[in-house]
Amino acid sequence: MSVMLTFEYLGLGPARFCSAYRETWDYQRQVHTEVAAGTRPGHVVLVEHEPVYTAGRATLPEERPFDGTPVVDVDRGGKITWHGPGQLTGYPILLLPDRVGVVEPVRRYEDAVVGLLADYGLTGQRIPGRTGVWLAPARGRPERKICAIGIRVARRTTMHGFALNVLPNQGAFSNIVPCGISDAGVTSLAEELPGNWDVAAVAHDLEPHLRQHLAVFTHE
Image 1 (tube, rainbow, N blue to C red):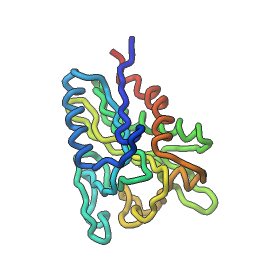
Image 2: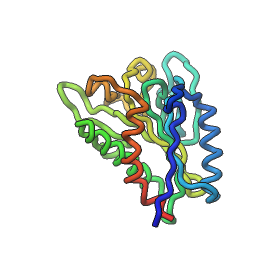
Image 3: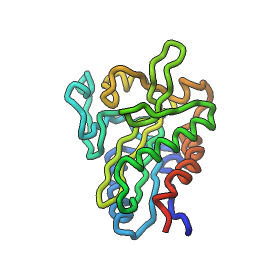
Image 4: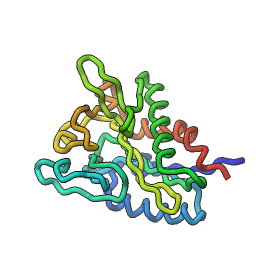
């Protein structure tokens, strides 16, 4: 069997730019229609967004920005989060096999990010009852989320995806209750391993892990 999965580095190639969220969402829907119809293979869009807050269906009023900053309400699961410069956002658009539900792709995204973190010398983990990838408490710091995940499945095809924090932007997260979690922290690769981090380089490092863990959805 051959594996069909294509990758697109939107604004993360030789021409670097941050993508507008609404335009990227429109593009996702276009790709989703084609993947769901079987006219194109599974496709992963990797981007770095212009600053934006997005709120999933479970977001409560008190979790929105404290200063009234506008929010884009989206059709994914989960709560509110931030996207913007310094963060790698990935949208795997995949046709799921029969009898595979929404939880399985979420777990696969988590596994891919955990594998990437291991390459960098960090131990990522799941937290029972919570989605995303976390780092354990250390040096007086609480559990810290480094990657948020929120997806939607329609016509057996995934939309939305994951957001991996590469460079810190605590100011953006301190203006909301990120992912509805008030008893834990948010972190980034640069905060955990200071160095010369680049979102595009991290995206390329992540691709083989995504190929490995998403292959179960892409065999023809």
